[in-house]
Amino acid sequence: MGWSYPHISLEDLIKLVKAFVDVLILASGYQSTGRQAHWDTYNIKKAFQWATFLQNVFKDLTCSIDYEDSIEEVDAALSELTSSHYFPQGLAYLSSTTLIGASDLIVKHLIHTVPLRESILRATLAATIEMDFDATPSGKHENWMDGGFSGCAIQEFESRQRAVLCVSVVQTALGILSKAIGENLCNEPGNLPYGERMQHQTSLFTEEPPVESVVWNQWRARNLLYMLDKRTMRLVSGASLIFSAPKDKWIQILGRLNVSAETDDDLSEIIELVSIGCIADRWSSLIGQLMSSSYESLTISKLYHNVHSISLGRSQDLCSNAGSLNSKEKSVLDYFEVLLSNQPKQLRKLPPIIAAVAIPSWSQLFRSFLSDLESQFRGDSLTTRCCSCTTNGMEHKECEVAERIWCLYVIHVSRSHRTCGADSI
Image (cartoon, rainbow, N blue to C red; front, side):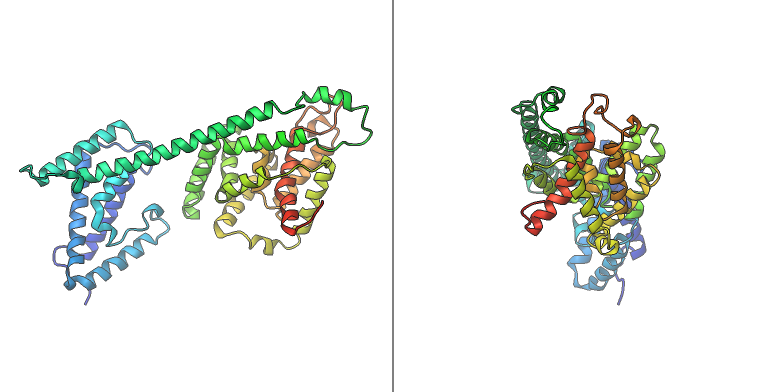
């Protein structure tokens, strides 16, 4: 039977829905350019009126059996609209059912804006009160908490406050944990400066000594501190948000960031963001894996040998290994490899734990990273090293290169041996 609703055509209704989507995006706090959206009481009231019109139309459509075919038509049109790669994925849930609550959607987006500026909060509350007064000019609205714009705004503000409180509690807990790990790192028994320990150890060892448990724990604590740091957690959240968008969207975003990068430090931050994007979905499990790593009395050379061996074993069947990644992880990893193709030494600037977990052990990038580490680890030239071991007459032990090799071992070798039930390396 098709569209039979007499008050508006299907085409015009979909146009209004598209415009409403633009309003919701602005209500989230930002323009399409990335600048903050400006809202005042007048504009918020206009948005409320628009939302009221839409929800009244959809209520009419759903409340009458005469419009069942019309509902099917509009839902099909909305499904086609929201399935487009260019449609905001955070609003992909829109349907005739959700648009019955169009007014609530506007209020939610305004209240849950991060950060919620005081000017927007004041304008939103003023607009909700004025809209409710317009709806009930006689003042007979006895309890606005039971409905209306004001009731919805108050409920959403309470919801936001609960969420903010939860975030605050988590940040406080992370701060306490990070402080405890940092203090433990500084107060580790026997934690003498490396030079002092080596002075009395040099005569005792004619061969390369194993990594000490103190050094092992220092590396673990230092990398845990990075993973629990507030800045890092923001990068994880940002990466999760960026890479949840369609591939062509986040490629555009990163492309603009790359072009606007003015310094080498800016580029390093972009590479760090992308590398975290490769593993953001596994962040909690990676923290658990790092915390559970137990001490093993091995030399750095032995750690490197084991990492190199497992890389050779896993690189035989690249297609099979790549199939273990989901589509999002594979897309981010492909972009990461292209980003580093002309500048592999940028990997040296990544935090050791991130470089270890972001690069699959079967990939060509992993072998390039290992080769670079070996050139620093084995080389005698100062130009190949990123530490001061040579100037101090020492071999690699707790320098940055050794720490990177240790991270690779803990993530890729120890895990595989625990999984296989092996008792030793």
